[in-house]
Length: 355
Image 1 (cartoon, rainbow, N blue to C red):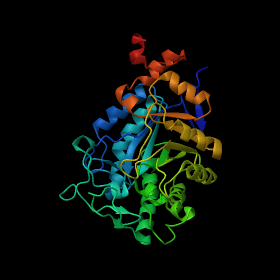
Image 2 (cartoon, rainbow, N blue to C red):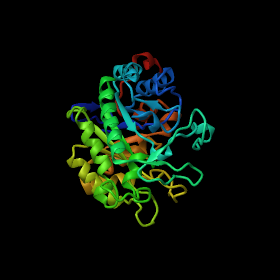
Image 3 (cartoon, rainbow, N blue to C red):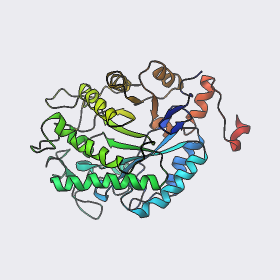
Image 4 (tube, rainbow, N blue to C red):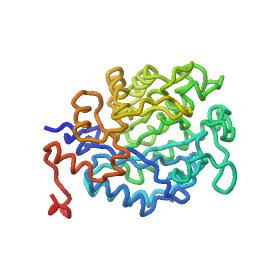
């Protein structure tokens, strides 16, 4: 039997296969609202057979958006258009998830296809925030250093966003703690130079993430899955850089707190890190975390072939396969992968005659 097409039950949710649509920004929202683009984009991947579809990084506050065109979930008015999308996803047999995010010092940026650089001034620009007043790029504006009171407000915003996500029909929440965004900025000593309870030691630097999880768990049902995406390494040997050993240690703590799966990505907290990009280059990170902490993991990064995904699962490196660009190229990768691997798979009735 194909591992890729075996179901996986996490708490009360059963995924029909191990294929996850990784959250990918579409830069197509206005004032944070989902629209027809998001419905068709995500819905087509549900029709295509993905087991879990995770909505792109969705900001918990307006200034937490990467760009002015990012998705948002900071007000109740965002719920209704999101519910339309989750209803369609679930009607196709997939599970809808959402990634809750705050971009921190990497916010206030242009759309990716317009260069993606930080916007210094104008109507689509705003003051960014960070654990310390240090910009990501030397040409970026210096971010505002968060006070403890402001940190607590953002933690509350994650809680409120999780409550809205539940009302919108999502069955999985993923906390975005990777790619140099705000939570990653806190746990990495390359971006956190605080001397209070949120800086300095390992325990202090992960405090922000742990308090967000605590807050989310006050509203997110205990029987629904909770994921965390981390940058498992920063790919540099600088003093204070986050390492895979740090990630294994963090993952064990998160598992004890009730986190169900670590989505193991990497990098993006400092410019120009020497990343060894290649097919499956991040899979060893997922494997190390899974082996070292006992928590379930998701493998992500240049996974493009059904046989490759199958081998990752059979090796015990990960429990789920997160596909990003491959699902942008081919929404029907799961259907085609089932044929390649000889797995039994039910096509949508509307497409059955093309089987």
